[in-house]
Image (cartoon, rainbow, N blue to C red; front, side, top):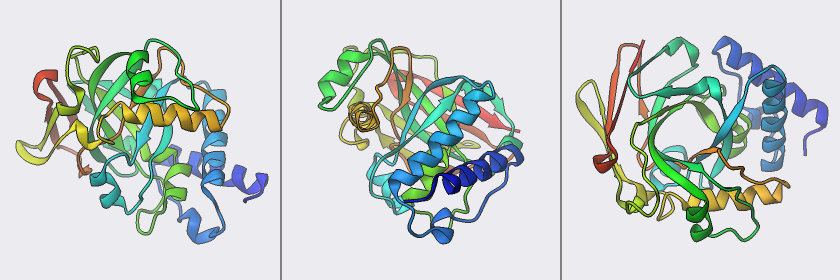
Length: 261
């Protein structure tokens, strides 16, 4: 376990890297004894300093919930991070590349809760009952830690590599559509780069919401009504650069577009 001083120091390094859009050396290279508990402690200190500075928390992201993402990262268990209001874009947005250290895109569904959700025995059915609606989303990944050799400890410490979210326009209640079969066809500059279906996320994309509620219970917390839960990618991440136009087709749930400038 890392000392409280070390946890605070790393959280401050990550905050500075976020401010300057830079990367820091791997935490696990410098502190090989660091644990998953340490990494959530680092994320928590960073989160609290951001809230104290005036940012408003609007939801949570779940990462590494699909085989595609686990194979792409070499990390084999889900993780989570927080999302602030100033990181949410609408479809059609122009997104400044300079806001990030590096930019990759993932295809996801997001869920907005109408009721609080609490573990320790939360099931998929409980999660579906608590969800107001699903909405297609693109996640913008942004790492403040050098990518080569990262472990889940590095990723969790870095707010699960969350950068931003682009939300679509189509809302569906869980009883209106079979969420497992929502497709995602991701294109960059008119060329299809990645495809998948939402069932790739733990068999059902809302399974991650139940997982998160149970994980939160271990930390003495719960998911609250009104929170947006980004459920995890069902494609591999796609790198983007300045000037790239991105389009994702979600079939019956519409499309999302954005451009990086």
